[in-house]
Image (cartoon, rainbow, N blue to C red; front, side):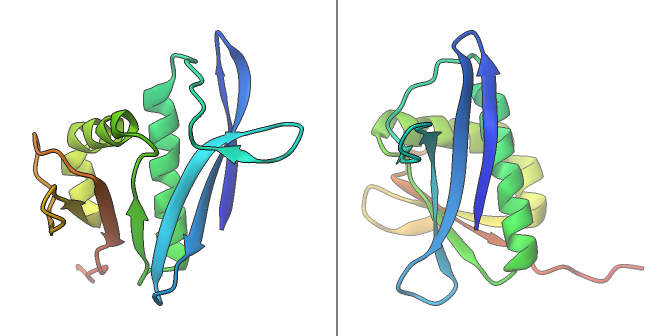
Length: 139
């Protein structure tokens, strides 16, 4: 499943792409994200847009996760930044919105010891895994 949207700011309009790709394990998906080259269509996860809208862009990526897991409720989504700085940016975004995220998703972080643990603030992680919580029927 692929989502496209635009980042609009001082550096112009930049096409962004979020792509969910199933890996070799059933129900496991990689979340790929980056700038779309208008000429080749190639998606670069190393581009730096500097459009002063990083929070809005991350919120849009998060919104795609809701749409994706609505269609694939059993999916476990794996995400990591293409650089340590990007992974840190993702961690900061998760931390800022953790209370809201945890209402709908179970989120794990991959530690430096290569162990998955429930996401905690102020911990350095190398990657993240997210799974939609089962909906409960409430009166």
